[in-house]
Image (tube, rainbow, N blue to C red):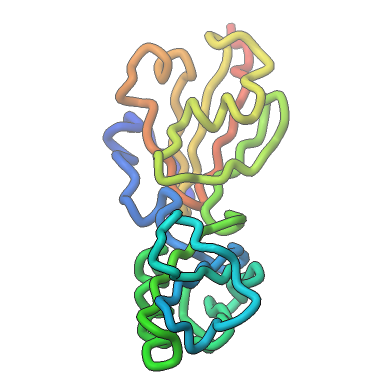
Length: 204
């Protein structure tokens, strides 16, 4: 059944997040910065450029294009390269595509793409926490306790808290104390996960 509660350990039910979901790929709403190095003699960026940021003495130049935002359809417009599909791609893949599009326009172009704003790969933390927040995921791979810490921790004593992870149409719950005592339950999070801190009700 959709949305049913799972009574399995986090380590069994959720496992490790795949590399593509922990901040390594680009998605709609993300903003990127494109840096283009052109070898001398420059043919596309011959004027108004900045010195080579890598400190090379070869006379190569770098142009930093204005910040570009991936649109709702997953595309980004890069000047001189055109409309590029970016959603679901890694930064190196986007770099290769920009370089391919600039071949023949720029002289031996080298591309560096940097994400300057992460809006697509986030985890939402709500419930009995210091502050409900959206936590951006990074290539380092944020885990459950990282997300709770980013939200200011829990408001109730650890032994009175249950933590729930909602992934897709399923949700999984476990006492927070168990997560802290067993490092295997401090699982890696994926983009779109919702972490809810719930105060356990007293029972008699």
